[in-house]
Length: 225
Length: 225
DNA sequence: CCTACCGATCGGTAGG
DNA sequence: CCTACCGATCGGTAGG
Image (cartoon, rainbow over all chains, first blue to last red; front, side, top):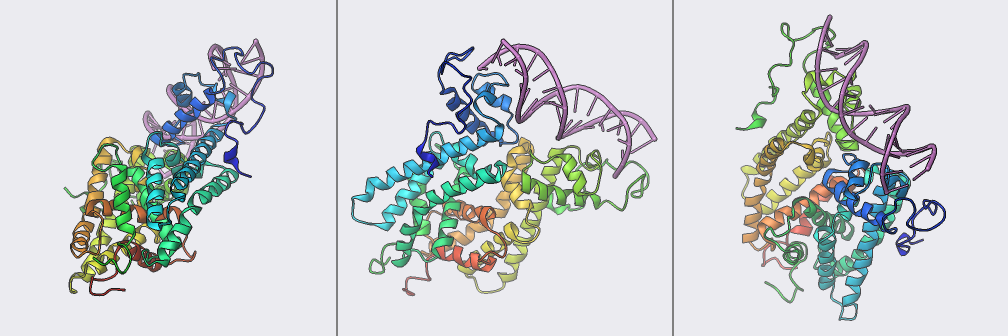
């Protein structure tokens, strides 16, 4: 049921020729060549878009010849799907870790939201942050089936936001409707991938503080101005 | 200096063959065939992306043969640029009208922001709203020069937001930094183009109210809960 | 994973 | 604006 639980298993179990698992014909090292293709594809897809990136570009980025990516992936579209799945699974995993880190502390929805926002900025703008932007902007190039699968992962990721926002709403710190607030807030964050440049003024912590100040009222009614 | 002021003048004044301005060879009607190309291109670029849309698709959408778009535009890239310029000029124009409509009333930054947000949703999600999403998502396919020109138009559009946000900030109704607030708010709105479906729950007025509730504190410190 | 290759499609042009 | 066309590039495959 959970696609993310199987990180090393390829989707179709047949691509390896037959006998020995490595050092066939011209194979340089082991199966992490597949990973190099995914990483390069993520970078190129983000930079130029899926349709404007050729499989030859991707092959070259991994030091291969034009036909070789198709030894690892059935099609260019499957490579795109792999990039997105990889990105979403990593994001979900890291989100869980971030929430676990504060789970033992006294409950504080404002702090929890700060954790979610900060983590989201990290996934979006931190090191190795090509996967999620690709996922956000290239979904139309997936098959319907693939897109449905990614939507499930996305819901899983965004589900963590709902109880936090609901609690903030119940305490009067979030005035907008919870569902619309989630859409608008995630949009504000996602859009940062369009304008944020590392080392240009704001840090990810600074962005998190600004977003929190924008979205959430100052603490309780007792604690006025 | 202002590109938008010249709506009917094409960029290069040479494409018409020579003599009579219309009814040459196989020309059906007048020069608004160019407009049909722009409209169709806007729709297709939004739906499939610039790189995944062929000039043949665009020609077919306007009822032409494959070579004919190049009678109106020097290249596919110029067509993209025309779509974006068209969209931005219309958006800036309509924004001015929306602000003028409330300019005579007593100054109220919260209401002004509501006007800006509501207008932005209209430009983004209303009828004929393909141009701005294309502009937002396909800028990387422009030349550097074209992109710089579009950035100017975008700054012109966003400049209207700054004084309104600054006033809200001065009155304590907007807690985040004004510049970051503008980026985050416009991001929240822009992202709606990804999820909003007309007739699906929220109206544009409802969205505007939700965004305002999310971003701006309830009225002055005297008017507590 | 490379070599060699194929059919399809694409942006664009000449000439009317 | 159409007809006819070109060179380039693309995703993908066979065979080793």
